[in-house]
Length: 608
Image (cartoon, rainbow, N blue to C red):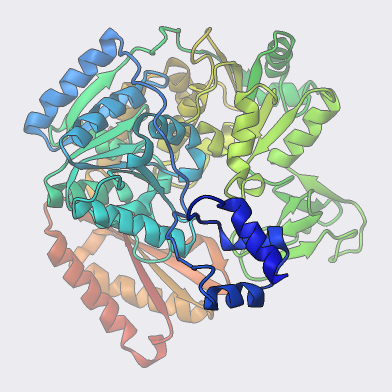
């Protein structure tokens, strides 16, 4: 065995000193660790540790694409705005080629020896942009997000740190989610916040609670770096700052391939249900458009912003609905696992065969999620390849890329998904987009519900007809005459902004006022209510009528804790430091009472 291992070594390096991975040598020679140790002790073999990257290499393989005249104009305007403004908002319609402008700006910074931070709302949902940038910039581009393990994160941290010390072939461009803000930059020249309107940039829980867009503006200020915010549907706060002159504003209104904006059609859900014309939760208008697209070998995206099979199940005899034992929400039925799940704490239960309240076996599912839409489509189109894109199908790091790759290659013809399908996707053959239920988006108890609904619908509409031909968008709603639906059809962001901003000024909401949410939590309902009332009384001594509440949260109980909310509105003229001191003094005064020591007080500034 000893001589056999020596022969194996001579086979790999008969003429000169060479190296071979230890694992490979032992596998080929079928020798044990003890035999290898004997050879090492006698000086026949030398063991050497070689540091290797856990992260894959990326070689640049494509040149920058030429810009069209509108892109050239927008790029020059960005340069002009950066001369006087440190933050610029790029308002470019979907498929206008904003990424190519980003590449030009990044190239200039890299040539100057600067670092660039490119922030994305959710790193797993933007693989196409990452692929494009790594093709152009190769090993100088690194990706950072929460799905990396600790060892991989340390390696990225060290590569960013090594660039500060002047080492070559280290990360100069970082593509990352909000946590990438905290890497050790010292030569930062530019920060790009793509899809800056996205709610994913907000860190809600746990602390620290911050908005990555606002933190990026502050990080740019600390490093004297320029900040570019990009979106087809900017957040009203950023657009307000741009209109007020605080930020620079550049518009890109022409699509890159000069394709007309998609045709937007509105289908009446109420009428279709009454006439019993619904098929797979689609009105005749959408169903016909889907059939025509499939006949022409084109692709379809169906958007339903609710995952699972059904939002809840209900007994038709007594109205009983199974709820989570830890949260004040109904359980969602997931057909794949055949279980009821809570989307807030993860609690699950078996699907009941009968009602636990009255014993009836007439228990039915109500509403529909992406799983149910997928199942219904397979009944009508058994030969068509259908994929589903939601949290349930993208739990692993590669799952999302596989689904997107199949759809890009044309192996999938219909893609059903939640708001994941609205973010950073570019497909050539998508001709039809269907929004299955716009009412769920609009009818939400939040002052930003119309803004969010407008952004989501306009973003998902932008997936249709991006390159080859004009696309078609069908919006299904029970309120076809709703003004918001009309504005989405027109793509009129300016009017949407003007109407909403007047209402917010009237009711003292952002961006005219700062908003702070104070959440009070305790396992005892009465204790939580009493503490919330005491805190509200203390706050009104300072902030008077600008204190709203307390009131129970939209989800009154979560993970065994009852939760109430107090909202404080701050005038922009009030110094933030003074407001912070007064808020903390009020919280400390209430919390220091013996019976409130176990109560949780959670402040969240700008909770949107």
